[in-house]
Image (cartoon, rainbow, N blue to C red):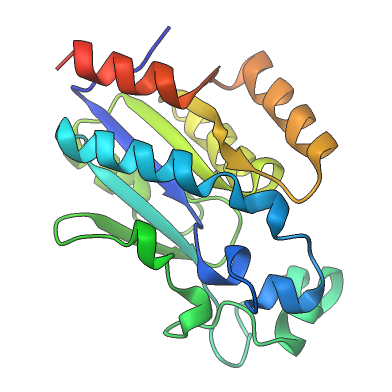
Length: 203
């Protein structure tokens, strides 16, 4: 099973400076951002292919208010370092998408403050309005925002494709287990080459 260019969308999850850039908040916290950076080039290829074949591109950004009152238990209890290092504050450089992958006019940009791209956001409304059936997913991190979003897409009966070489996690074991979990019940695991070829042959 491969995605069709028609009725397909590319969901680019949280490819932000805070997660991926040296000196960004995750780097300051001490997380191994080098483990995520290998997803940058495959994401760029998917974005380029989507543009070439008129596939809508939806970017998500994980963002918080400056006072972190929307951070919930994650910020207050599970990872308070996010607030300590002013992580992902809306409007900051930390929260922006990497310049090499930056959205263009006509792309969709979705801000969220939870792992799922569907939770308390207009994503489903956008997908329905665009007539989307297949969602191709890339970005970070594999077992957090990617997997949570893929599970939620599956529950809504979207045919979901996780691009294994275009997603990444801070820990390789978690990355692999997340891919196995998603492939079991929630979607199809594929790679960048296969998606490029599928979109090129099925316009």
